[in-house]
Amino acid sequence: MSFQEFIVRVPATTANLGPAFDCVGMALGLWNDVVIKSSDSFGLTVEGSGMEGLPKDKTNLVAKAFFRVFNEIGVEAPTVSIQCSNRIPIARGLGSSAAAIVAGLKAANHLSHCHFSTSELLDLAVKIEGHPDNVSSALLGGVQIAITDGNKITTSSVNIPEGLRVVLFIPSFTISTEKARSILPSNISRDDAIFNVGRTALLVNALASGRLEDLSLATEDRMHQPYRKPLFPAAKVIMQEALLAEALGAFLSGSGPTIVVLVKEHEMSVVYRIAEAARKANIPGDTRILDITSVGAHILS
Figure 1 (spheres, rainbow, N blue to C red):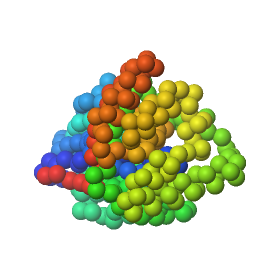
Figure 2: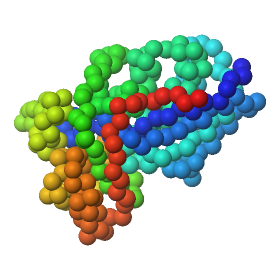
Figure 3: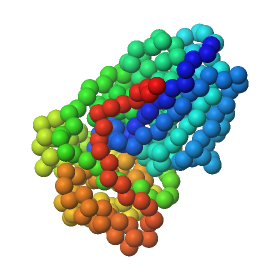
């Protein structure tokens, strides 16, 4: 099977947005590109983030997802060359694994003439990833509420208020999702559950209605961030400094260690305050200002 090469472009994502643990994700304007070419033999290369440590064979998440589609269809996969150009930092809580999975699924579905619907692709993505928040926003773009009911994934898109952007502080160190999940308690108190449920509802309404003044309260959390504090003790101080610089809200991105700060103005003041707080805490890292994108994974010819 010969075909014209194409590119799959997939956004970075942030999950949880504070209280909405494992059920809300948001797509960011930072993109991975995956080039798919017809080839006589399988090959996979990685450039950019993860080029030293990521596998270059069929165990790579892009390849695993790609071949999963053809296994599900029950037909032989075409022989391809996969070139990954990674701009999303690895193991920083910005959805690098979700981006890889979605890229592989999207590429294979394109070659199978869209055998699977978008909702079916999302179901497959969740089976591979294990939770729906990052993959839903990577596939669909924007802010997505995503819940699992048995094997079915239900999503609902939330409005992105005009002018809302993010400032990221991306530490140089990494945190594995497995480690960050392993330290969470099996059960939480009723008070903490009520705390998070209320703030998740407020978060969705703040975004949908444009009541950005509610975001500071709406991004508070008692379900996961307090327990992850030992993995990144300085995170609380950095987030506090962001709020003192008139940021709208701040939270750990997914399992961390990246910190996401919501802003509509004062971006450079926020950048300065969080960078200075990180410097005082002796935490090396980078700051970035990104748009929130309503565009999910898509094909470029």
